Length: 179
Image (tube, rainbow, N blue to C red):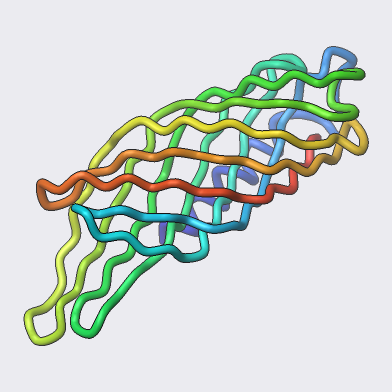
């Protein structure tokens, strides 16, 4: 259900503008990211694959808003399994070194992410807990055209579950399409 809602949000954002970016670099975007997550929960850590689907709107070539769904990974040992995922909303800053949405760029993003941590213990059952905490990220990349770019991103996400702090770091490769 949550994945369907995220996909619906991205498709709705994609329908807000035409098929080409305006001269000032404004327009909608959709970005898929895949990479590695490092999750630290109360002194224990693990890593897994991180996946994100992001969409938003560039007000100009330097400032955008984004909404997203991320599956931050799961970890388990003999009797305990944990999975973290969530939705977020934030702002994106981007600076291209040639033209708007063309050539090398640096980027930053920040906002709030609502994470859900699902934990199951063999023989005892399962439970989940949610929190809304900040996230920040930086990135570098290359825009091949005004409609297509590739970026490498690092994000730091705070979460809390069952009165335990969770620190999540992701390194992802993202493919962005702009409309």
